[in-house]
Image (cartoon, rainbow, N blue to C red; front, side):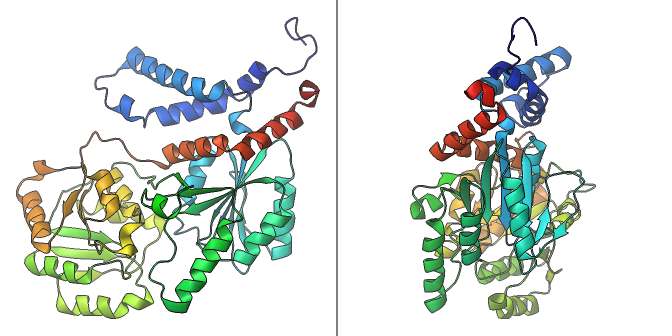
Amino acid sequence: MSPDNPTGVMTPMSTRLRSSIRTVRAALATAVEDPALRRRPGLKGRDCIAVICEYFIRLYGRIGNDPLMQDALRFLVFTCRDPRTDFRLSLVEALRHRGYEVHYVWLKRRPLVLGAGPGDAPQPLNLLALLRYLRRRSAVRTHANVYFTTTNLCFPSLIFALRALCAPGVWCFDMHDDLLYALRGKARLRARFSQALLLRVFDLIVHAAPTLKERFPCSHHLGNASSLERLQRTQTRFDEVLVLASIDPRMDFAFFAAVAAECCDVRFEIYGQISHDARAAMQSLLHSRPNIRHHGAYVSADLVPILSRHAVMLAPYVADSPLTRYIDPLRFYHALNSGMEVITTGIPQAAQHADRLFIVRTPSEAARVLRLLQTDSSRSRNAADAAPISWNLKAGRLVEILRAAPRMQALLARAASARHPRRSG
């Protein structure tokens, strides 16, 4: 007890001070990525410290004055993807870096759980053990639960069961695409039904590409990002072009073949998994163009070695198609953050980065850009001082979206009461 606090009950200010270490860490981590700070050249010593303090004051004014503390959220993330290739695992790591408790669950026949502790080993659990785990973790009332679900349209029955059995929280669905892809006929009808049914379960929807707002007007823009930073390349060669892709009907095979035909002295190196409905087209492409090679699928750990060997990427998407209208390609962010030049067809999301990408309409135009880069590397569009688009920033955006939800505000108030019952009384 102290003279200023004779009852010994924690005040909102003392509660804020308890989490100041986490808040400072999040502020500093975000400050170094803030475009307004990165574009102020010549900052040294005290000036640099002063600018970071400016940023922290802005951040503290937005978050720190909230008596419902930043660390009062608990995330339970459900995914249908292998952690080795799951692009949302970087978002999980960014949330943990900000000090949040995050449990990551790979839903499959025998679910795999990555606990919140840094030393927690992956736990394979049966369904009953998973339910016990979730109930035990989510029942602690000092935190508000966030059920972030990035399972595409898989496991609708299981999602319904989890919603019914888990402790109260905000259920947030990750709409990173329209999730209907190239499905046709009965398969597409079933997928649309599953989508409509699933979305009724969720309190919030976040989307990646801004065009998804057309399909889901009440959703919130989150967007994609990359955890990569600018890579050091021993040489800058523009006669080896990287194509990092999911090889499926979204790839414009005819466009790609025409570019390769016009650039016979350029090698095109493809990394990515081939979907069953694109195998014939891919085989035809590889047979017709000897300067195109496919190196197989890749996992997230392969990104740095692959990208560091290349200076330019080609993204030959089908333009003006429903298949690509709602995508927000992760490879844009990997390439831009790592310092690569990107040549892409004119899909809607490319326009969001028009100042940093070469957007082309024809194979001849793509070939001209390659020739230009080969003869004059100063024509680069991806400036060295451009701010990275990181998952740390997206984690902050996700928290903002969640905190604005009325249901979350009620849950946070309940969590605050559980943490400090004497004060709430």
